[in-house]
Image (cartoon, rainbow, N blue to C red; front, side, top):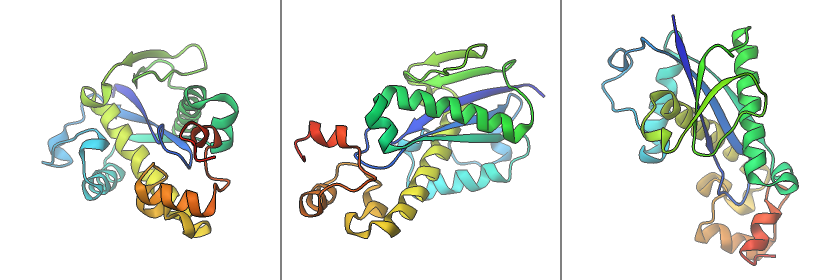
Amino acid sequence: MDYIIGIDEVGRGSLAGPVTVCAFLWPKNLQLRKISLEVLKDSKKLTAKKREFWAKSFKKTRGVAWGIGHSSPQRIDRINISRASNEAATKAIRNLENKLGFKVKKYQIYLDGGLFILNKGYKTKTIIGGDTKIKAIMAASIIAKVTRDDLMRKISNNWPQYAFETHKGYGTKKHYQRLKKFGPSKEHRLTFLKKITIL
């Protein structure tokens, strides 16, 4: 069975929480109609309910697998969001390989947008707008989004005053109001807050 790997990130523009990347192994002969009659789309074009549906469906689908990589707010502040995203993409590939028990260098890897794998030797191709063109990238975007949203809900248990469970760290009106009232937490990206004069 031949495979491709799609890689996508979520949380790049968030004010808090990690940036999360998924590397999704997709069998080339996988037929979507065997999974669902629903239309597979980029996570941003799906409701939370539809994303959860796809995530559960992929967990039941034979032949698919994925790895997740995160970069923390502190790491983002230290090296910038682009480099932190690429580090998370590299972690995602390593975690996928650990799950599979073998290296995936022989497979074609498609990355969305400006993502890169920091380790050399992988067959990679960056696709602008890949989350609307490559099914493996669409799947990666869904798994990354569901994973990060779950993580932000857990983080919210430790920082309930910020309501992370509702806005997932993005710059909503409610989030700005909480920031002005309570100041930043250790889950916030201080370099991002400075750009919007919160600090």
